[in-house]
Every structure is written in C-alpha cells, then in structure tokens.
Image (cartoon, rainbow, N blue to C red; front, side):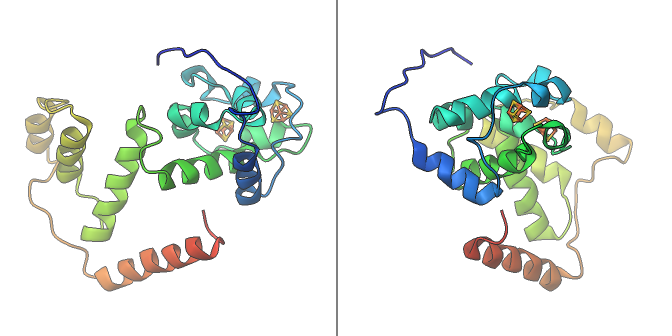
Length: 194
Ligand code: SF4
Ligand code: SF4
C-alpha cells in the first residue's frame, strides 16, 4: 500500500460516517482512549497495515476512506479478543463487522483487498449451487482479480487427489437455500442484520 499524507481538516473529517458505524455496531467509537490493549491481544494485528487501535483513531478523525481502502478489516477473524480486553467496553469486533458491511455496500471501496471479492464469490456459489464449487470459485476469482495464472499448476494435482471436482451437482434443497438468502436480505433492509 502506498503511503498517502493524511490531511486532517473540517473538509476531510466525516463525522456522519462514525455515527453510522456506531449505530450499526451498537457501540461507541468515540469512547476509545487509545490504550492499545485491543491491538496487543489481536492475533491478526501483525498482518494488518492498521492495527485495531489505529482503526479506531482513524475513525475518530473521520478518515474512513483510509480504513475501507485497506486490508485490515478483512484480516479480522472476529475472535472478539479486542472486545473482551477493552477497558472501555468498546465492542471493536462489532465495529469491524460494521466496517465490512459498509465496505461491502460501497462496492469497491476496498479495491486493494481480494478478500472482499473472494467472500462475494463464495456466497454467489452457495446461492447458485447450494454448496461450494471450488473449481468455479478459483476460476472466477482469478479472472475477476486479474491474476489469470494464479495457482494454475495446483489444479491438476488437486484434481488427481480428488480434492477438486471438475463437475458439480446442485444441492437438492435449493429452495431452502434461497429462502435463507432472501430472509437475510430482508433483515438487512430492516437494519436488523449486518
Ligand atoms: S475480533 Fe478482529 S480485530 Fe478484534 S482481536 Fe479478533 S481479529 Fe483482532
Ligand atoms: S482497547 Fe478499547 S480503549 Fe483501548 S485502544 Fe482498543 S478500543 Fe480503544
């Protein structure tokens, strides 16, 4: 990730975004006093360009584009260590969930992260086939991410070992799967699910 100079001014601060995150997550971003206990315990912090406490600070400063443009929110594994450790009862794991939802809805804000693309394709496969179709997932992911030859040589080995199926059948209960997706969409519209 290329480092960009951060300009903090009334124009660059977006307090409305923080309010949106707080409403979705049901917790306060503004309560964070930067003790760093969340980052100290986070098992994924070393892989993130912005560890959890820095995400909180960036949000407080209204720098949400910087947060959504990075990979950190997609590296979070929802283990809730941060939430458990926070002395100020900030539910940071829920804030991460809310940020992923907002990134998802903004469709492309997280351009640097392939995790978002992989998640979308994963769910599309489940909705279409009722189960995961790894061959299709890998092929479409490679095309959409522009990495056409990624892991290409692994394919034949996995097929030979029976770990990857070339042909795939649909789940017999597709109508039930569709009902689940429709219900979740309705809940999201009502704001009762992320
Ligand atoms: S929930 Fe996410 S941010 Fe919090 S400690 Fe776990 S991995 Fe880190
Ligand atoms: S543990 Fe809580 S108060 Fe401390 S930096 Fe993390 S979110 Fe902020």
